[in-house]
Image (cartoon, rainbow, N blue to C red; front, side, top):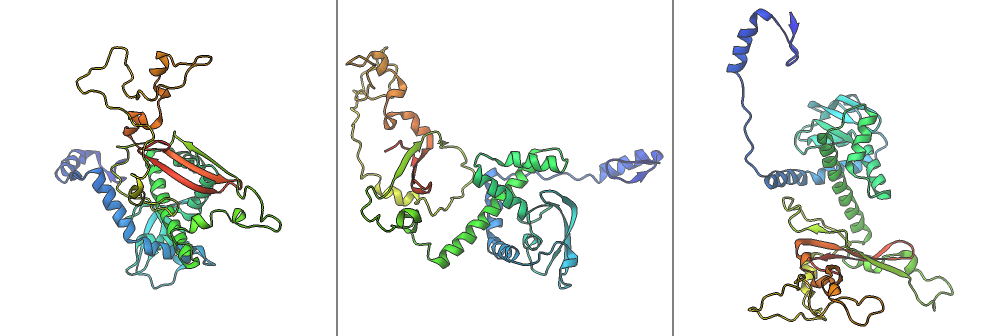
Length: 353
């Protein structure tokens, strides 16, 4: 007798040939998924959005409850079903964690009562603790460059597990749902406090700057701001087109609302159109630069040299055709002396207009 490593059962060497025939006759074939990535993401997000109100309520109950159910023994006997998941905490894990599911209750809601969040909306085989997700959220708030991959690798080191891309995708999916829950909780709090009006941030950007102390009524200037743009935060126009979701923010206005004013600011420099029949000369190797913007002259020279005219970087931002390949060309923000953002502008298909 020997052990078969494939299914963990005992079988006789004499019946190996017959067992192989039986397995080949009962072999099932996996159905190929003909859906596109966009269809799969659309179905995934729709399933998550259907249960978001219930998950938000369950999260608030878990967050503000004195005790948290961690197994089936901590829950009353009203439940009718149980299931097992691989639960992961920061410093320990349980490969067969028992979760009790009540009648007509979502699986992720049952996990939320135990302080866990599943990595898939319908059938969850892996769940991550809310404390671990909160730890990573606070780490990213203090160090935005910390991505999901080093966090997952650190967890793999703690649990003595080999890192794989699947673990990163599972953690990323759970963390994305966790952030959506936090945004919904913040929206509920803003609605109760009266902070959901459209111009609330414009009027209450920095409490310290808005507060006038005794003897500071005639202070000039009233505020000290610093502003700068970041042209390195670009995004290709065709990148991320499979994900059709729109991020709703109380900082940024919608693009439809901003596009109403796109024709109010005219370009100060009008590029003259060349004759369509004329051809470019051999020396004109920079057709993306307008003639009105040859660039700055070199030091100790009054006129610009031909080299300056051909220098690609010397053109104005709105005269470079390469910007058409980007959906977002950067971001422009201004902050007060207390480090709080006062104004923010996303540069969409344009430079610093």
